[in-house]
Image 1 (cartoon, helix red, strand yellow):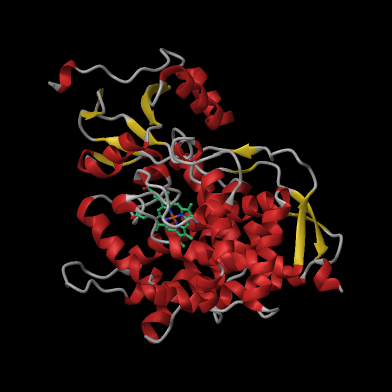
Image 2 (cartoon, rainbow, N blue to C red):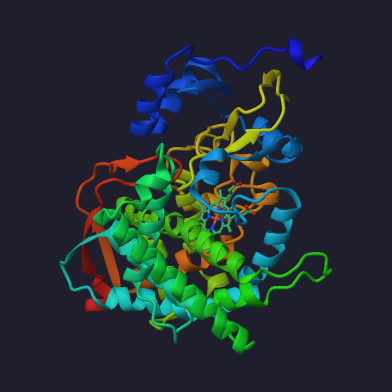
Amino acid sequence: MDRTTLPEPPGPRGRAFRNVFHRARDTTGMFADFKRRYGDIVMYRLLWKRFCVIFDPFLSEEVVIGKRDRFQKGTEQKKLLDLCIITAEGDEHLRRRKLVQPSFTPKAIRGYAGQMVGEAERTRSGWHDGQVIDIDEVASELSLAIAARTFFGDDISVTTRDVHDSLDGYRWRALVGLLPFSNFFWSLPLPRNRRARRGMRRLDDAIGDAVRRARANSERTDLIAHLVNARDDEAVFSPFTDGELAAEAFAILITGHHTVATTLTFALYHLSRSPAVRRRMERETDDVLGGRLPSFDDFAKLTYTGAVVDETLRITPPTAYLGRTAVEDVVIGDFRIPRGTVVQPSIRVPMREERFFTDPDRFMPERWLEVPQPKRPRFAYAPFGTGDRFCSGFRFALLELVFSLAVFCQRWRIDVISDEFPAVVDMVIYRCKDGLPARVHSRPEQAA
Ligand code: HEM
C-alpha cells in the first residue's frame, strides 16, 4: 500500500502539555493507560514533538532490526552525551562498537571478576547483625566502586566519591545544556556549576592518567587499557584517539552504572519478598562455594543465582524502553510514522504479557531453568536490547550481579522493612525514588 495513504497510529489528541507532566511523574502508568485505550502502537505529543510508543514485540523488531536503516538513536541520548558508541550512527557506530567489544570479551571479563568480588566482600564485611541499610544506596556505591576498580585498575587512586561526583557533574552539565542560553548559564560562577566542573575535571584527569599508563605498558588489563589497545582486526577502522577515549570511557561508565545498581536493588527486594527463592539461592551458594569467595569459573555453576538475575530483569527491567528517531516517513505495521517522530519500543510491557510468560506478575526464577525455553519473539525478553545496538556490557553486568548477590547471600539475609513496592522514578531508567530501607540479619546457619 502507498505509505502516504496509511493512517498514523492512534493516540490521545492534544494533551501536549499534560503529557509532559504525566510522563515526568509516572511513565509506566501513562504507557499502561495508552495501551489500554489505544492498543499496541500509540502516537502522542510532548510539547511540539511527536512520540510513538510500541508495545508489540513484533513491531518493535521492525523498528530495531528490520527497518533499522530508517531510524537513528533517540534525540534524548544525543542531547545528554557527546559523540560515542551510544550516540554514533552508521559506520562510525560500527567502528566504535568494534573498538569497545575487546573490553567485554569473556577473557577481559575474567580479569574483572576478582575486583567485583573484592568490592562486594568489602561491602558485606561492613555490616553488623540487625543494621538498617538503604539497599539502593549500597547497590549504587558498590557499582561505582566496581567501576572505579575495573575501569582504572588498582593502582590509580580514583575513589567511589570521585566517580560519583564526576557523573553528577556531567549530568548537571547535560541538564544545563537543555536550557535556552545554556552556554551563558554554564559560564556563571554558581556553586552548582563550580562543583560540577570540579567533578568533571577529576574524572577527565583520571581517564587521562589511565590512558597514559596504558600506552606506557601494554600488559595492563583494566577496562580503559582495553579501549586504548583496541584495534580493528580487518584494519578498516582507526583506533581511538585520546579525545575519543575520554568520551567513550565516560559514556560506558554512565551507561553501566545505574542499570546494574537498579537491578541489584530490585533483585534484593524480590529475594526479600520471596523466602523460598532466597533459601534456594542460599543453598546454591553454599553448595557451589562452600564458604569461600567466588572465582570466575563459579559463574557458570551459579545457575539459580543467574536465573534470579534474569527474572529480576524481566519483572523490573532498569531500561523501560528504547529510543529511535525516524529519519524518513516509515511504515510500521499498518501505520505511517512521520519523519522526526521519536519511536519508543517498550522493553517492559512484553515481559509482563501472559502470551509470552505464564503467570507474568509472579517472581519465578525457575522459569529460566526450563529447557528448552518456550519460543518467543526476540523483543519479548530484551532487557539488554537487541540487534546491532545490543548491550556491549551485558557479560560485565551479569557477572557483577551474580557475584554481588552470591557474596551478600552467603553471609546475610536482607529484609526490606516495608512490604510496599518502593516509589520509583521511571524516566528511561527505572530506579528507587526515596531509597529502599532494609535490615540485615546474619544467616542462622552462619551464626551457629
Ligand atoms: C543490568 C544492566 C544493564 C542493562 C539492563 C543494560 C541495558 C542496555 C540496553 C537496553 C542497551 C541498548 C540501547 C539501545 O538499543 O538503544 C544497552 C546498550 C549499551 N550498554 Fe548496557 N545495560 C546494562 C549494563 C551495562 C554495563 C555494565 C555496561 C558497561 C560497563 C553497558 C554498556 C552498554 C553500551 C556501551 C551500550 C551501547 C551499545 C551500542 O549502542 O552499540 N551496559 N544497554
